[in-house]
Image (cartoon, rainbow, N blue to C red; front, side, top):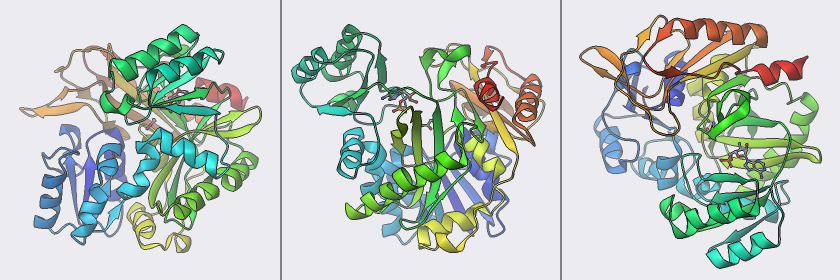
Length: 419
Ligand code: AMP
Ligand code: GLY
């Protein structure tokens, strides 16, 4: 089969590497991919938001199955556009992708269907948002309604900080139109778990759980990032909690989306917090997580294309989704300064490519150069978490580029929880 993957980061590289092992993939394209993926797929220089060009490419090249990985093209309706041309896709259509595209939509959905989440209120008027904040106590959380590259969330420690966040989103338009509506919600505490789940709109098959490390610096300090590393499985996510999440969160969400006429097919990402009063949804994403994918897919035993196609065809109940018993750890190697400003264009020396997922890099004259904030994800798998963590850091030592920056403590919190 002629398969194309839309996207160009580490998550897409992990998807590409897994699809390469699928028995029915004959040709594999990635749009745009990046210079670090050329060995694994044909990179086509078309951006993930350039819907017209993507559709034209798919038709011209007789693509038989498309995997739409990033949030933007999903929310913009790429799946609908490809389906119109008769090309089946992995990923939700535009109506279902709103579960990530609008936080106000997802919060209202959870309220209407009694899915546990933080208490909240939604505002389109700045003055009303500010008045509401005066009635609440800090810490409190302010979120831009739309997509904001994972940066539209402010955990305000004081009311003043919360007012400032509202002002920057609603008055100064820091996130453009994404901030014209804001959600203000109760601050929750507890360990966080990411659960990615395959679904065809009827059956839900969760993948192995994982833990992201969102802050830039060791000890969960510094700015929020897209994710500085992950481990799987997440030791906080016990079989009892998993069963509870299936009953109280996963199935009710699928059911709610069906009742809304927004059947979700693809990968639904549940960002959960295990609070003292039970698991609650922090956020939904309509796609694989990044860098969660870089620890989850290396543990997948089943044929990825087969599972993906089953979500499209409504036959997920009939396929096995099996994972290795072991553990995985992914350390993100970033450019010093990320998520703020950083320099790029430095040569990368890869002492290994095994388990290395290339994100912010490009090929120039045969050399691989840094070209983004998150440059690489370096993953190792092993029978135990301790061994996976050590092996990932061993691999990191074999990779060099100027201004390389990474957290030294990926997996430490999980190891403590295990003990
Ligand atoms: P989000 O983009 O919604 O996943 O938020 C980014 C991060 O902010 C999450 O991973 C949490 O660590 C934190 N966060 C979001 N909402 C809350 C909340 N209601 N209470 C506490 N922390 C939160
Ligand atoms: N790692 C979090 C996300 O993909 O949104």
